[in-house]
Image 1 (tube, rainbow, N blue to C red):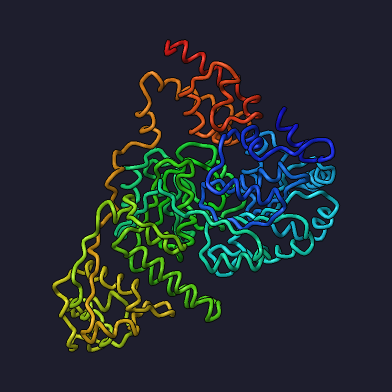
Image 2 (tube, one colour):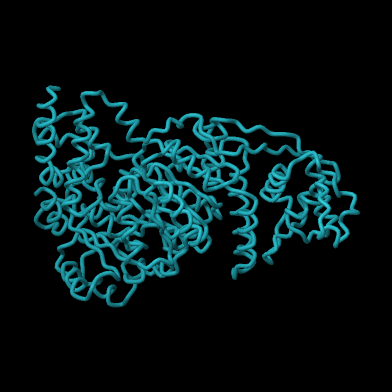
Length: 627
């Protein structure tokens, strides 16, 4: 097998010339061309240089270390934060004929010893390892006795204490540069603002490394954010209208909400599974495996789920609660549409989301500097929610990238929001907060504004205030929208004691003095789409795009892929992605040599699965007489 020849080549430079990266790309991975900066990154590492790579999800980060590990002599050591992530990647590599393995806590002593022996004997091309295991003296001693091709630190944002997904075990990885000074290192992540990038470089001793920062834009993802009214009802309407029968991820802030939302979806006929850190490890693993291997599964999760998940056909990511930062939002929404097909990032949020996150932040154990940075991140996230211009431009600008034109594929572009002169209403709202003593929550203040003379208002004497009843022109819902936007834009702050009391900030002074005016957006009840509301799934739409003669072949290819995946115990996309099946369908190859030309068909998969798919092609094509 050619991939085995390539593997042997990497283990001995005395007997063979090293393969070129282009050769590995074509013969192992089945692709003709590199994408974006991949080639430059790969060549840097192949030549022995260090690299820091910021590349969006779906941009092909893994090839940036997998190919150098196959080209350079020795074994590539890949640092990965999650067991499920390393298992998924190893399974995919083994399908390609690559000698890959992992070390983690799921293995017994004999398994670990077997892998360590294979490592020592030079029988592995890539070894995935969690940071805490890698830094054990036993592992480091073993690595010092092996020939190492490189160290790759995946999900490198985990090293940042300012980031959204900090892992303390990552802090020790900077020592690799001291213990293995001649081994190139590459750190990779999809999500890092300027501050996080600097911290990654400093903590991992990569300040002098070449930095590769590719564009953050994911143009196939449609970003939509709307007002939260009845979140469950809104979610059901969204999935039924746009993504019926498709895979998706729904994020919730709490474990209890995850459980309730998953049950609600199941009660309405969806195949939904909960995932959070409170579930037993075997349940989490089983739910993740079903999500990866079955069609149309929806995972309802806390942020405990999703890092590095390589499922290409996740058609939507929904948020029922506000993420605490744009980094977290970008990372989570980036799990949709890794195959480049149209996908949706859908979110509903409300005033209570902003209040709850601010309370959590202020009551956290972090120091003043940490809280200051986290406030800035939350403010940026709230700003993205309330913006009236193109959301994608705001999102990209946060990561230091400018989009010269509105994207045309977010809700504010597709259905521009209506704004209104809210200056008088805002002055009334701010005055009422001030006159009630800045110690009451939004519901109470709205009651005062609307002139609700209940027992509590009578008790505090606020029925006698000059602001009592001056806001009758707006409904309770409209006032909640005003207060939400005032909190989001920093005119009001929320206390940290859990009672949600509103207080003025210095920002509101020009408004109260009459020196400023303010425009607010009118809420829409739903984060609307102007393009995708056909009620058909992406697979239905794809089937529609095929000619009637090709549809039986498409279904037959997918069915054979599913059978092979079940036999191998891997997700169907590990056999071939949909894009590869489509290329095979359009080419209709008659031989293994012709099949090898399809995008995504490498040597190992050609030898392992080629004849099976040729048989399908010949059977269906002959039956339908399409050739």
